[in-house]
Image (cartoon, rainbow, N blue to C red; front, top):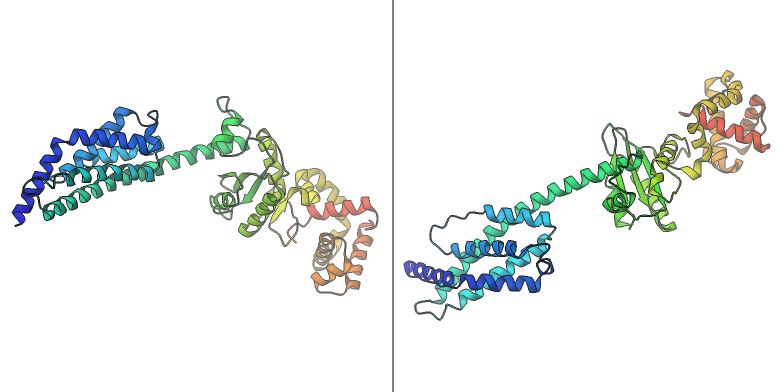
Length: 393
């Protein structure tokens, strides 16, 4: 009985071999008609499509022969080639399904031949689908490997272009428009640059930030430097600005600086300087993320350290003679008071002390420095000086 079924399978295989050229032509017509990627012959040329269909169908029919040794190298080559051409894997699998279906339909047409039983057809069907599984597995594995290599190459190019943009080293053969296209950024702003201190050398400061922002409809591109992760983000609306800030606050475990907004990609390198300045600035002690515009004095303190340093030395020199513990208390009090809009009651709540204690400490600063908190110019000098000196307190 088994031998009889094997004989029927061979009979089916022979019948298919006789009509295989017609089946191949029919499959090509179906693919051109049903699948857009194959409709456009500039993506997959006619002779290339014919070669791949020819191999697949002969592979499937060959699966009906006893002792057939599957050679999957051509299937792998096709998978690699289609990945390079940008044909989606789902589309490729659909094409293979159509081809296998056409072979199966041609096979059922020989059922009426003398000696072919339902058991023989079921056995042939099982062998055909087994061959299809072997073929598509080899193809899809090669496709995925090729796609992964392309992603790595694309990311390497994106990373290199991002760094060139940040450092103003755009080559003549790459226009800013080209770079925007390759980095998947809109061609015009507003943009901001983000600089985040790496927790360790070569370690991402903001893991998965690009994909998270993309899920929020914010386009961005990132580059990892040894000590800093830098990125450019497109922020077209107030909601996107808020989303970026919230995302950075949620992800940040180290200091992060954000530049002012700018409109032209050509200004990216300058924006990076501002982002780095914001990164180094000592803003709100309770926040790791410093927005340039929100911390002008703190940013100014690190933007011109030599000038500001001389100013700080002159303004705060009298405090250097105060015992360290007392000086630390005075500095902390001033910073909390300034960070809370000059509200003595709020500062007292944050510092867990009486408002009169805050007043007394502020008076001590005025007495020691000779500058009044009620004089705008003198208050500005104190704010700038405190932002620069004893930043670790």
